[in-house]
Image (cartoon, rainbow, N blue to C red):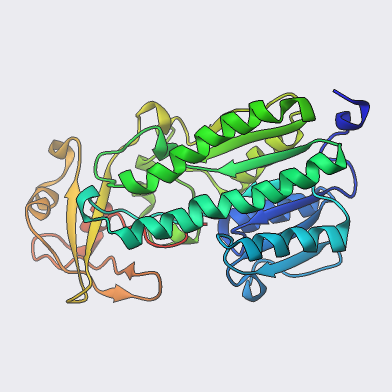
Length: 327
């Protein structure tokens, strides 16, 4: 390795690109880099409208779909024109939804590929080209999902996990391809994380998704990204930040299937061991129930309409359908 490549990634005036960063995990990662003195170029579809991230002397915002080459090019051009280098790339953009495998459509798949794969491909290609030209190495971290390795009964996400598993595979290959250039390529696979997506998810449901009984926070994910950014000899790794869930220890999970034509959500609840449910919960598992629609991203009201199960009880047995951007 050349002397130039030995510079640590936390050196002053390094520049990081973070995609999918208007809120949640992405916004937390941006703030983490700013705290460490990095210049940061932040992207999401409408990042300039974010209430969590703002432009500054050391921060640039680029709107646009990351799955489009023109957007990726604009991000890289902004980094170079404003800050003169690209030292770190964090691929955080991603969409995730649950559907039975046979219900996935061609449009569903195209959407996943456009965001999760093309959203990785173009900006990573351009960033690596710049890192090679700089000859000072670099760090690339891609956010995947612990679910890619460990399927959970009730979370019907086989098709979305095609993309997440693919990102883990390309992480290994790129790490080997560019090791001699000092460009380190790693992935971070979160499990359950407290983000805006889960603002209405019952606390005990979240806790059941972690064998430690402690879902990750945005800060936990940010700290892990900073570690991978600084770890000078760590490359080709998939770092699981999931409380051990990738070993198969996640607890109760429930899936809500949407019937959009009638504007009604039907609950199809599944549990590995229903014997631990109270009588009202067992009764509820046998039937279909209605939920109110609420807000954007197809939020679901937790008011469980069931004569035998008051809302306070049934809140424990409802898990929201995952839809849209999860960062």
